[in-house]
Image (cartoon, rainbow, N blue to C red; front, top):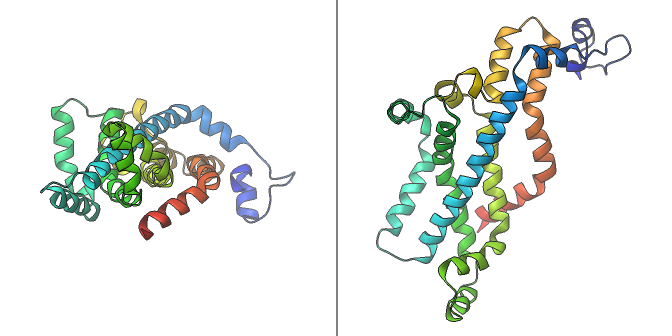
Amino acid sequence: MNSFKTTMGIFGAPFAVPGADTFNLDGYKNVFTRGNFAANYLNSIIVTVATIVATIVLATAAAWALVEYKVRISPLLTGFFILGIMLPIRLGTVPIIKMMVATHLIDTLLALVLVYTAMQLPLAIALMMTYFRSVPGELKEAARMDGASEFQVLGIALPLVRPGLAAVASITMLPVWNDLWFPLILAPSKANQTVTLGVQQFVGQFQSDYPALLAALTLGALPLIVLFTVFSRQFIQGLSAGYGK
């Protein structure tokens, strides 16, 4: 509400609804004319969508292999991914920077996608494994006996684990969109800034312009609020069902 007020309206009655005397859109005008929000939003959308797709594809393939194929190293690989859940990826910031510099990926959106995918894979794999274990074995064996390939069997199982896919997409989207650390060190240039980094720099640049500051913060949070409102049922159902199993 305060992002739609004048500065006097914000400090005079911060909990009041904008009225005829306090309603003002200058904050949003300043954000789009003096900031770089259109490019920031596009960058965040590209990074988030690419990370979600890569995480779902890789986590699905890895979880399917770990559940279906009983080889000696399966417990070791499963423990490796569980270890990845416990250790924060930020502990490896310096090696990550060196790796990106060596591969000439520093200050690119691809660097963010690769890091975020690696960051989200351990939890996504663990979650998908619980769902694949719930798929009836008789269904998979019947498909194999009918001559279906492994990819076709996986295609048969995927509709049964759609809540898991929705949960993976949700838990991937939230931290990727909100992250400030890796955009700040891996893609700091103006052309590659994400929404979170753009808001942070906007806050530092226009601290005295409170309507613009609140408008920037509102725009940064709005996509997550809308998406969580629309997909909250799938998000909660997918997580609760997956961890319950």
